Length: 166
Image 1 (cartoon, rainbow, N blue to C red):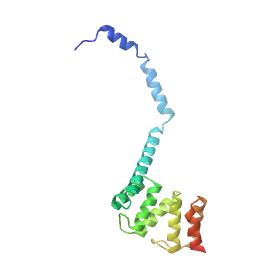
Image 2 (cartoon, rainbow, N blue to C red):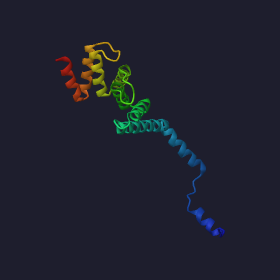
Image 3 (cartoon, rainbow, N blue to C red):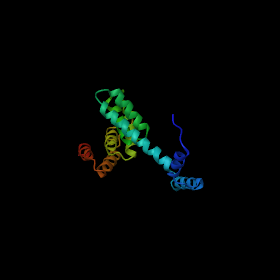
Image 4 (tube, rainbow, N blue to C red):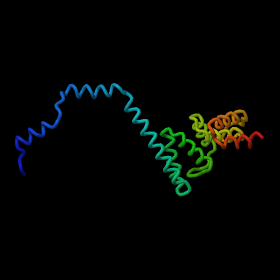
């Protein structure tokens, strides 16, 4: 194996910029100080992407492997996904991948609705209108939830309003 000559060593060193170590350290520290929440932001985005991934898996598995779909929606919900909560509520309501449990469905719909999920508000309105899932029958709450969904442009809220209150 040939040995490097002094000339090779000198030429390789000369192509690297000569920056004092203190300047490098200051620039790195300055960058971190300028955005102290960068790691938290990365963590939050990672959770969002993971939740979207689990929701995607769940949707692709519906009617093929309902248990896998249910577990995927559960994982998404645990990561804070509003869509995951809604999908989990649908699974509990319909018994896809789990036993029918209207109380848990109502819980999922309520939590998703509180986070602004329009279709979850429509589902929760039905639960209040009919007194399902351990919720008291409350037409006023149902009406308010449907109005909330309508304000978000959810078409089903108009149909549900007509069905419930006409």
